[in-house]
Amino acid sequence: MLAADLEFAKKLIRDVPDHPKPGILFKDITPLIGDARAFKICIEQMAADFDLKSPQKFVGIEARGFIFAAALAQRLNAGFVPARKKGKLPYRSFKQSYDLEYGVDEIEMHEDAILKGERVVVVDDLLATGGTAEAAVKLCQKLGADVLGCQFLIELEFLKGRKRLQPLETKSIFKF
Ligand code: AMP
Image (cartoon, rainbow, N blue to C red; front, side, top):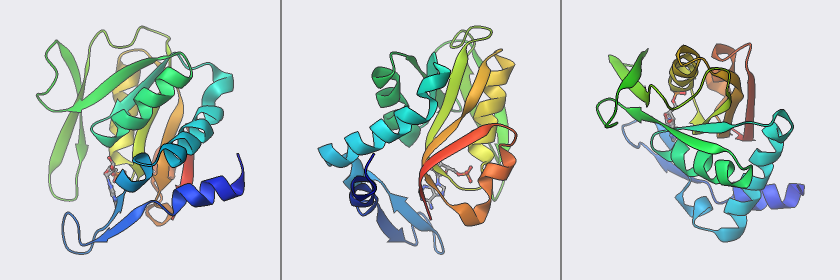
């Protein structure tokens, strides 16, 4: 992948100050995924990261993780698995809670979404503190998955989320 291509795509990430609350600089990916060339550049780069480990499933974290995990699954002939917020999945599910700044939240996956020993990659649009991805990893492991690593489009390095995901391999395309 050419550095100029990645630079082009990075410029399409829009900063929205004070969203969803004061003090948060929200990284808005909608201009990037709305551009055919930029979206393709990012998916090609992300696909190259775990291709050699032959992932069988990409687990996308609701909601923006779905966009990247589904595209990667198609690109690498793998399946897509949604990790959803509490109460959304229709069938029997495993749950994992995680801490938020104030309170706790929960994500869920269908109990039959991953077979024992299946090679999976956990995907989200952005790595901040790592709490959400850590919960998704735990959920995959409860189902018996072989978690190959975690993959993000964006990493907010100052929040040190990748530390929380050790010893798993963590990949991100754009670092801020
Ligand atoms: P965390 O659990 O702290 O790593 O937060 C990651 C989740 O929150 C991801 O699903 C992100 O989409 C979302 N998120 C956290 N901070 C931001 C931000 N500054 N801009 C956009 N999304 C964010």
